[in-house]
Structure formats: C-alpha cells, structure tokens
Length: 270
Ligand code: ATR
Image 1 (spheres, rainbow, N blue to C red):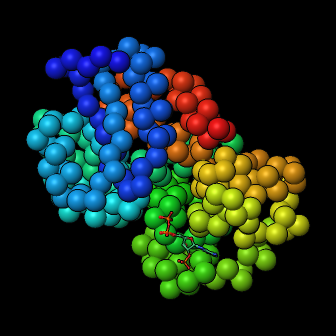
Image 2 (cartoon, rainbow, N blue to C red):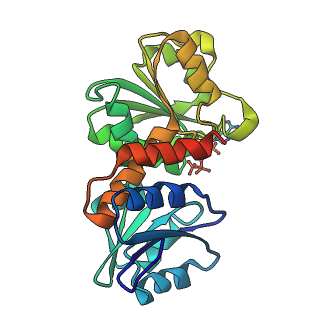
C-alpha cells in the first residue's frame, strides 16, 4: 500500500513479535479501503516506545508479552476494566491522550457466548497468570460461578480474592466432570508439546471446553474434547475477537470479521 501524510498508523509493542497483527489488521484495512497501516515493532525500551506513539501521533498500539503490565506506568489513562484485570493489551491515542484498555476478556467472552450462556454456569478455570486474570474478570462479570485451580495455589488464591471466586490446586482436576464450562488458561499445550492437564476420560459431551492456547490452532485438549463430543472454543477465537474489538476502536468502523479470520488461519496453518 502507498501511505500518505493522512495515513493513520497503528502498531504493536512486543518482544518477540508475531506477524499475526500485521496480517489481521492490514487485511481488514485493505478490505475496507481505509487509509490505515499497522506495523509490528520489537521493543526493548517500552517507556521510549510509548513516547514514540505520542510524538509520531500513532492512532493505536497493541501490547503483547511481556509488556502488558509495565506499559501501564507510561500512559495517561486506564480504562476501568484494566484496573481490575491489571494488564493493558491495547492503547488508543485520542488527540495525544493515551488510554489503556483490555480487550482480551472481551475476546474470550465473545467467543464463549457463541456456544453457551455464562450466567449461573459452573466454570472451572485452570491457571492464574495474565490470561486467567482476563478470562476470570469476564466470566464473573457475566455471572458465571467460577473456581480457579493453579499449580501454585497461592496465585490462584490471589485472583480468587480479587474476583471473589473459589480456588484450589490442580489435584482437584479429578472433579472436572462437575463443571459446565472448563477453561485452560495455563500455557500447557502450547506449540508442539501435545500435552493437556485434563485426562480425556474425565470429560463428557455436555461440557463446553475452552482453551486459551493459540498455537497450535487445535490444542490436545481441544482435540480430545471434540472426540468426546463437547462444544469447543479454541484460543484463536479469543485472539480474533480481541483484534476485532481493537480494530473497531482504531477505526470506528465495523470489522470485517471473516477477512481477519482468514488472515489468522492462513498464517496458523502454514
Ligand atoms: P499468561 O500471561 O499467558 O497467562 P503466565 O502469566 O506465565 O502466562 O501464566 C502461565 C500459567 O500457566 C500459570 O498459571 C502457570 O502456573 P504457575 O502459576 O504455577 O506457574 C501455568 N503453568 C505453566 N506451566 C505449567 C505446567 N507444566 N503445569 C501446570 N501449570 C502450568
């Protein structure tokens, strides 16, 4: 694309970086013929990177690992959700005022609501890191009855206190069949590990299984759950829907979801 002085610039701050944002956002800009462009930057100095957003008047910036917490120090305003979740994954620049938002939880809840309602459902969440904070925020906001299990129980207890949920250790996974919805928000199953914390024999077809793992597109947990006949939500849907929300904030236009989904899947299946 040929940029002009009017082109609105969006970017990412991450280390390492992924090609996914460039593919999803730029495909969508092109499809809607918007004068926008998105660049991915590998950043080591977040403070100066944020100054760069202001100085160069970027419209918006997505924040990925490992900067979702650190970046909060350098921006002007934090959305209410960020104060609860404790992490920013997108910054919007409105006339030089940088506001941090969290759309990870929106991605998760939008994806889950495609297959189930959440209110009053018994929900088991595995993990107590950044991903778990975002999903538990969304699940409790939507009226789900959540229990958090984590390898390090003290971390599960910390989140449980923030969101007023139950918590426990991974030894309680044996009770997984008591839950309507089960979410893996640990890093187990990432890349080629082909691991799952949940024994397939403990799953039943009435359950909804959600995995926040995005690489591979179908984790071992998602494959097992499909074989059992469960409804499944793979992590790429959470990724897609948070990007859809970000795109709409960047542009004020409705996102072409299918175009973004195609870009994501083309990359992930390469
Ligand atoms: P993210 O921001 O992606 O959530 P994170 O903050 O590093 O990443 O959190 C990773 C989560 O996966 C944690 O809940 C971690 O458990 P601990 O808090 O005990 O470290 C969990 N996790 C990672 N490897 C695990 C493993 N082999 N077995 C069980 N849980 C694991």
